[in-house]
Every structure is written in structure tokens, then in C-alpha cells.
Image (cartoon, rainbow, N blue to C red):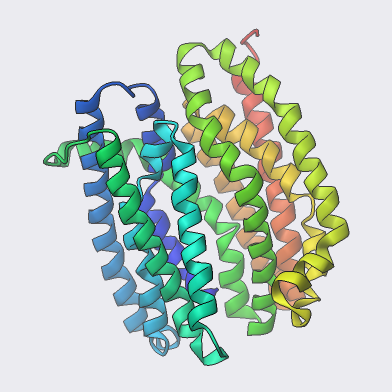
Length: 372
């Protein structure tokens, strides 16, 4: 988990916010094959260049830090997952509203990884294989998704343009910085726990984040991936119509998320023990602390991702996430040495509440003069 949280910073660099910035553009030009081919080729080229830079950075950091260098194979094999993210055109499938196929390829990753865990992981010493197997599964899914997009949409691989690549990077910079700051109050918690506490607390906290990722993958990710290109296109056509659709979908998502919160609170111990085993039972206490996250983050996504971003308020979204990230890092540094995993868990929850409140505030300010 420590290796995954470390490498995740470089995954963010490689994806560079394209899942939102390029998705918005593709959603508005779905019928122009030549332009789609041009975008596809330049974004893949941009991600290849970012992968090369990130690989050099990973090698430099691992070689220069004694603690990381002792497990260099673990970090390098974990970084291999980014080959899969270079090839996986999530941004293209979202823009073309082919979320069913994106789901198929994502499921392929999880299925291959799960099967390989049962086949190859037999004892604790095999931990070195865990992240490698995930990397291989992601690479396979990336190749399949890349091939599907090329053949399904008759795309042509065109010669990339440095000028266009730089334009896409410039257009995505605010979103990349937003995702980076979001990462500071999610992924960095595990990283700081690994530095300030013992491996047991890091593992218990990480188990809660794994449960949350499952909930997010079942509830929020499918909604975000399917609704974002649709709402972006709607806002592009009419701001009033976009606001009306947001208002219509909000109570549905909120009630569903609230139901998940209630179930999560009463099944926290069972979920932890069922997935991770009796040794992780204490993590049930942490899971109950963050049981409100489904509702809090659902509202954050409505007002932030589906509200501010389609309104092209990228700088405001960056400001919101930067405030949340700053709060999270400072509070973690203050609380982790004394309260360990409990401090990290409470900081996680309060940070998400702060982010949601700010998204709601700025969205209301942005749209207060618009009548539905």
C-alpha cells in the first residue's frame, strides 16, 4: 500500500487531468473522425512523454532514498501499472459515452488481478508479486481498450504535434493541479501514516480505504463517468438546462448515498472481517467514523465535478481542492504523531466535509444570477 500510494503521484502526472478536460472536448465533436483521431494521437503521445519523465523521476527517487532503495523491485514493479494507464483511453470512452465498454475493461483488470492473486500469492514472502500482478492486469486491459477504440471508431494514428500537445497540457493544468491536491488529502494520508506510525496502523487504515474504493467504484465512479460527458454537453448547449438536470438528479443520488451510509455503519465490522480477516477487526472502528463519506462525496461530486467543471470554473475547483489539501496535510502533521490512524481517519472525514461545503458555496455564487 505504501508503494501504491507513492507511485500514485506519478499516475496522476501521466493522466494529467485528461479524463475531464479532453472528455469535455470529445463530448462535443463525436462525429468528426479526423478530429477525434488527431486528439487521440496527441493525447497518447502526451501521456507517453509524461510516462518517460515519471519513470526517470521514480528511478532517481528510489535510487537516492535508502528506505525506498531497499525495496526497489517493489516500487519499479508498481510503477509498471502506468504503462497500462498510458494505453487505457478512459478519457476517450467517457467522451464518446461508451461507459459500458470502459466498465468491461475495468472489470477485466479486477478479474485478472483477482485470479492471479489466488494462483500466485501463497505466503507473506510473495508480497513482492502483488503489485506486479496488478500492473500486468492493467497493461493487458490498456492494450485491449486501445485496440477497441482504434477499431470501433476507425481512428487513425496521426503524427503528434508538439504545439497541440502543449495546448492540451495547458488546458488540463488546472484540472491536473486539482487532482493533485485531491490526492494530498486522500492518498497522502497513507503515505504519512507509513512515515509516522508503524506498519500495522498503516495496514488497518489502508484496509478502510480499500473498502471505500469498492463503494466508490460501485456507486460514484459509474455515475461520474456516465453523467459527466452528458452534463458537460448539456451545459455547453444551455446553462439553464444543465442546472435543471443537476437539480433533478441530486435527490436521487443523495438518497441512494444516504442508504449506503446507513448500511455501512451497521455492517462495518462484518465488512472488514469478511474481506480482510479477523486480524483487521479494529479497522471496523475506522470504517464507522467515515460512514458518511458516500453522502458527503456524492454532494461534492454534484456541485464540483458536475457543477463547477461544466461551467468551466476550473480555477475555482482548484482553489477548493487546494484549501482542502492544505487543511488535510497540516492537520495530519499535527495529529498523526499522537493519534495515529484515528487522527488520519477523522482528518479524512472533516476534509471531505470542508470540500463539499466549499463546492456548494462557490457553485451557488457562480449560478446565483441564473434562473432555471
